Length: 203
Image (tube, rainbow, N blue to C red; front, side, top):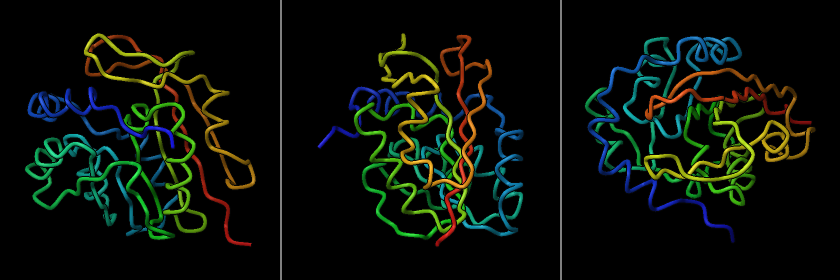
């Protein structure tokens, strides 16, 4: 079975949790808006890789039933301070729920999944979504996996590789990739790929 986590990346977030979670980072208002448009009021959302909890805080403020999680225990504790609620420690490979969530929000986290493991992780997310459930995920674009200057692993996918990782087209009633230029914790210009996908309804 393909390895599903990178210990060096987790070690980075363990060491840098306070600085990473406490930096002046606004919630992804624009992306959350596009995601929210496809959800019913009060929809149940799983956030993977919540980091400092900024996006969960915004989605909670919009009235959604949010379940924030992170793979780093240290970051989960930082998010708990911001959100004043429990934050689960969840590695991607440990997601095992079936048809529980109306939406899954995965901003800048699945990009740390080793390339061979990513399709299986997306399978788990697909299973966890209810029919017509919505997935948002963002990735750093590239052509080959590698590490950044901080030692973190990134899968650095092309749009075609990312599309392939999401499996058969029939699983999704809608699948969109948008590319833009932004930044990150390392403060370097970054090509981002934003996926917004809707699970096919039950037959």
